[in-house]
Length: 168
Image 1 (cartoon, rainbow, N blue to C red):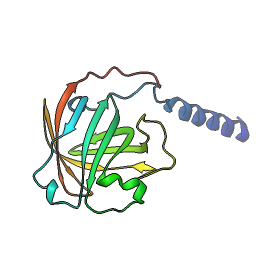
Image 2: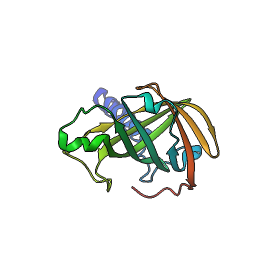
Image 3: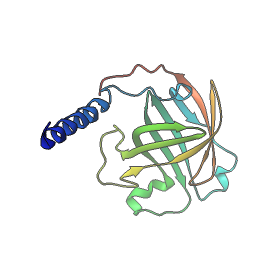
């Protein structure tokens, strides 16, 4: 066998092995974590009245996606006067989430109230990337610890849902 022919056969074999080992991800939504499926509302804490600013979360987890409404109360104005709204405002975000061991990662972006892309306006724009330590889960309650602000977040189930993955 000629040296170039053997090299060509070896290259073709390696290329076919490489192609056969690659697979595309399925074009279907991931399942997410069963314990999180549903609509959850954060319980107010005793600490919040002593804080300069606090935010309560309202989450909807559907399969591997999340939608959140963030209701903020503030005693100090960090925004333009037209945005401060007497220290009370709402923000919205959506994206995907991952539960890894004892940690909840939210990977999303800030949106308008209709969950469409937000490019400008009052409050935050761009990425929404909070991380929570999962302290405990039960069928109607999830206890989290925010890793950025180190505040406890207790979520109560308002409506249970079941994941039915949809095509992407």
